[in-house]
Length: 200
Image 1: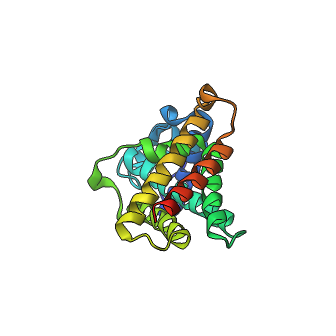
Image 2: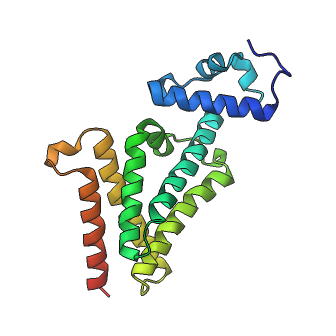
């Protein structure tokens, strides 16, 4: 059993987050409790409340880590391309691939619904930064878009790819045919960009 003073606050947070991520990926969100996380790191559940306000706080910090990893995945996909259209397709590919590799963590980012005031500013910045990345890539491909139009386009395109990702990881995509999620994502982005150009 871990003893108070054996680890620093920062070490306990890191240990708890590592354990929580492993538990989430092994057993899903239903098994993610502070008691289960504490047991994995050799501490009592009460000890975790010294470093996390509650389960919501724990989940929000897991989500922040997940978004950091998602952004790193997207940046790695983008690094191979300079053409704006290829970069947008790469974003879709990276987003879907991440969801497939980490379905429970990816879903929890969107399905966890804490009080709005509990969401840390840093986490909101990560979310805003993701949409800013998508907007910037869209504006490189469609520089005639103004701010309002580019925001709408980014939200629309993300919503479509996100839906494909959700259907893919819940194994519901097969209901509509045999085309892979990656192929559908590429088609969606390609056709959306053609539509933007046609409305110029």
